[in-house]
Image 1 (cartoon, each protein chain N blue to C red):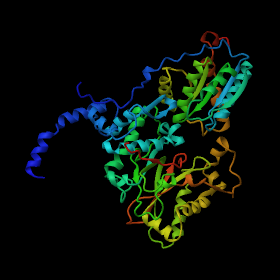
Image 2 (cartoon, helix red, strand yellow; image 1 turned 90 degrees about the vertical axis):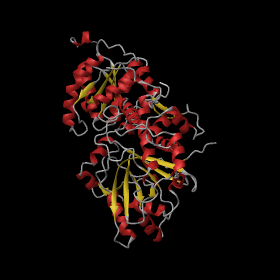
Image 3 (cartoon, chains in turn purple, green; image 1 turned 120 degrees about the horizontal axis):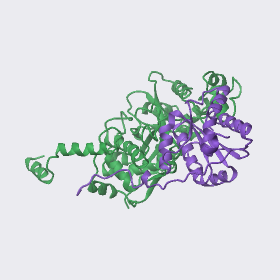
Image 4 (tube, rainbow over the protein chains, first blue to last red; image 1 turned 90 degrees about the horizontal axis):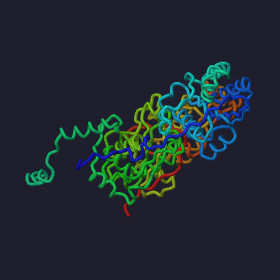
Length: 183
Length: 356
């Protein structure tokens, strides 16, 4: 076209992103080091701590905890490296807002690329934004666990119920499908 | 205009073809570039006219959103500004506004993706207001004036198109707010009793400059019948202290005062800092009030532990950058606006660049 209408989106497109590799799954969680990456959103800490407690009960995992530097954006590179070094598997969440759900998905994709299997937990209201972020990060179709929105208003008993409900999905996300049945 | 002029203009530029214009507008819609309203289709000559207004290199990166892996250069910003309906000569103000906004921690973080759907508040100071035809008087929040209307729209289109933050996908506003990407006020320096707002952001008076912050909504305070300035301050205090807008232990508001209120305070001997300090000390609520509306929970579970004591008074505003004061509107009624800031103002203004 001699007088083209100019494109306002710039040159960067999601399709140009290289595919992000997914970490190998664990054969089993038994005796593994599990890192909890808490995003500071309301009830995120008790939710993840209960998931961790249940995993310790079931698989004798060792737990470590970290608080996200900024819930709204993905973790910086040095923190990702440290997380990948100190844990065999990571659970992060709870993504229950526009930026933090996307950030949880992004952290998941980046940590997977660093070699650690991740279970990100996101409330079901934010599936489109988590999917969009994963695709932007080179991992279209990235899998994460969901729980019903909202989480922030739940009582502590209800938080524990929710943690128990999501547990099987978390285990399935972190371990090899073929060994899941024996777990 | 004489008949001869008319003929001359017609020869230089024939009447535009509305069918062709509509086809171009629909093309822009079909590409997903629009915020819902028609866009100006941008050609290379129009882009060149924008780029000619700045000494910046077209490839210079002027902003990035690390979390989505996107950035924007001068050229892409210019295309969006032209699409928004800006004239080329507005472009240095767009660049300054965008730089000012990207100084905000909330904007660089998740602000544009947020469920709160915040809108920039852009404030213009200095001679550029007159030069470009900004509205500096009545109806400060719009509509009706091309620079005031198109410059914030340009910022919104940059966020949509260059950063890729699109509603229902990476933009997750629960309800959003009216006026998102529409608020650009030119301070009424002529009727303000105080220093220009840009001076509070470190740019000397008389220099064209832009300040910006993210905001959630605005609430009017109509108080036009009292001779007592402290009555008006108490009225502002009441609105600022509303609990519904309180989601963290601290909050911030921009006070957009009408000239009448500002002059009333000045006539009572108050500087801008005096007004700020009066409100800093008094805006807040008791622990019991916050608790009765469920707001203690935010503090208990997420931040620093419970609010202390039912009767203890908790101040909402932290300091001068928690309550920037701007003077805008007509001197025809005593109506001011409390604008809720999303996060906290950076406390800086950006000079409007001149073509070197």
